[in-house]
Length: 175
Image 1 (cartoon, rainbow, N blue to C red):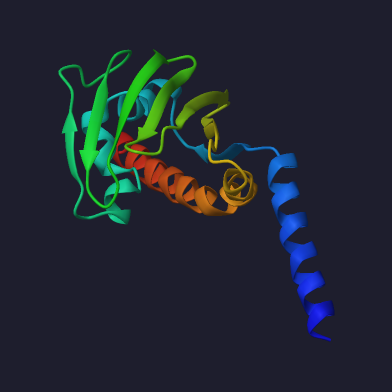
Image 2 (cartoon, rainbow, N blue to C red):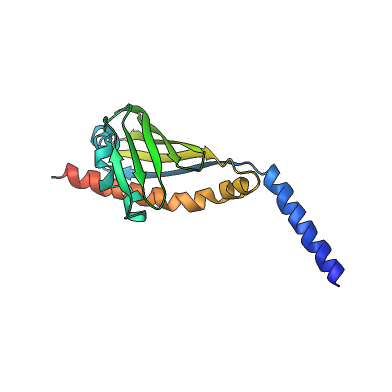
């Protein structure tokens, strides 16, 4: 009996290990929302890091975080770094009213770079805003399992941020 349990546990461990090497370690999390505003009105808030505290969920998630915005706060080259429960760096790499923004996001000590974007797609009087995060988990075996659940981990945060963005932009538009 004990031998059968040992064999079963050993087989489970080996299968889990092998699957960790076979599963993809990359992730792609994407969420969208319709905002009753033009791309220009949305871009004014999205492309300016000094306005991110009004809508991004990061400050709510880590109230102890100290955020420092770089010398450039808006458009390509704008950056910020933060220290809190987690520390990291963000830098806008592409920005236009017609497209949206691309930015690189990294957390200190994790060694992984997340390529992110917030894009705009006009749709009559509204604009469809899509927030996307792509990356790879570099940790062997464990990274593949984390990548597998990344959508359920990060997706709700993106949804919250998009709802906050919608509220911020639509409120500012009406004032």
